[in-house]
Length: 169
Length: 423
Image (tube, rainbow over all chains, first blue to last red; front, side, top):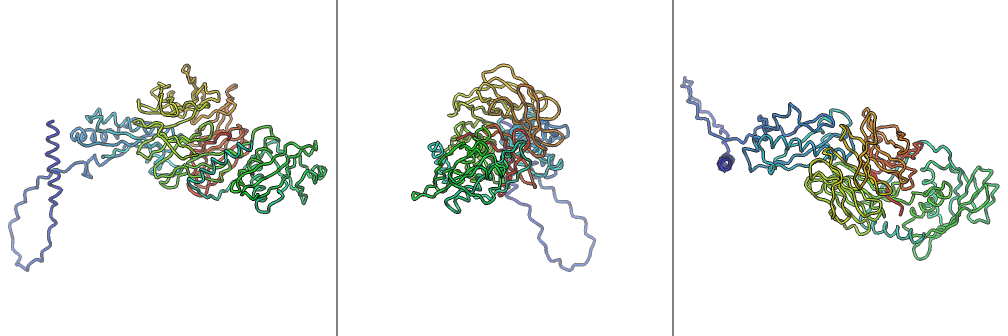
């Protein structure tokens, strides 16, 4: 409940921020003034802005895809921080929901890959839940090899297609 | 016979109202059968363009089967039995001779009368009249091809059967039903979400398939006569890999609602759901034996995807494929003595067959992107998805691996083909 209140406050702040876009500095034609040594202006106090880290391109949360080796569905070591960061975000934002979409490369039967894609989505779901997300925040779907991001018959393509996407709803 | 043909055509006719796609098809034949039967087809008498159309269908069918060598009539064109001089045909090296006439009748129907003659024994093998509406010229030709094929090989012809497949063009997916030679395409369903795994009801009246139109994999059953459809399974997760039992009383499907992909049985009305595999691995692509007692399926329970077998009633689950590589998509031969499947090794997919009795494996194709084999109802040909010139195409291979046929549809990638039953 406390978390909910906090997140609501945060949400309000966000809404407030969104409606008060920082104004662009307006270009004013400079009057020709004698050059004088002016004291450095005191820095303006930094505005207190709560940025949703989800919208921060520099945040780890900007990474929304988890990649897998061939015929593997376990989240790999180097992608775990991404999944755990989303788990933390979801636990801190219980109103947010994600859809996990499992995909495969074309080196299997379409039906086997549908099963494998489901397993890839499920392994990300399990790690999200371990990291604090609620099962009710997560939906999973498998596309198998039916929605390839890249359609060439080579590893450069295949490795892009072997992934789970984390899509915020 | 005529009634059966008529009934089949009624189905096609209704289907034609759903939607029509005119495809120019290119068919390429690779290889030839070991013992080709020399047969002369005399262009049919009677009706100019109509006769020519039927002749084209019949000669095309027989050539594609790889089992016949067409003997040039060289100027001889008898249409009636009385006009046939057997020595002419013996001199041309023909073992069999087909003659006939076709007439367009006042009521908008066409009638083809034809005879197949044994040139060596100088006897009539079959004589029959085939009639249909005048927009069913190809069907008449296929029926005649079936009769010739049956008399000369002893096996039932499959030229009058239909196939189903998925065509993918960019984001657009279409479920297509066509004649076994790829012509006469009818679009059953078209949408911008994936369609997978079409399968026929045993009587050929319905298709069951997987569609992603609601955002995840859901199984639908659709009548090819009325075009009406119903949801067969829409549980959380994926609902997929549907296949009818030979008696039509139940289907095997694959659900992920209880975790990983597992096989379930369900009645055609969607009731009576019962889980039959309990592996925790991916168990998928079930296929019933012709007697309905056993299921072959793909499973990765042993660490890699392989073919397994289990009694439908429950009991010992047995691994069927061994050795290097992965194996997928098993389908029984119509006589139940062997099965075909997709074999993946060293980056290539092959169509392979395994004999149940001696366990012998035969690789039937040269390898490439060859997937999802299914037998013709006479067991002599295997339809599969292949790739040529950068496109997904339909292909067939004879069950002895000697003759291949590539069918190029007009556009897009053909995927997931499955051969329908006899009408």
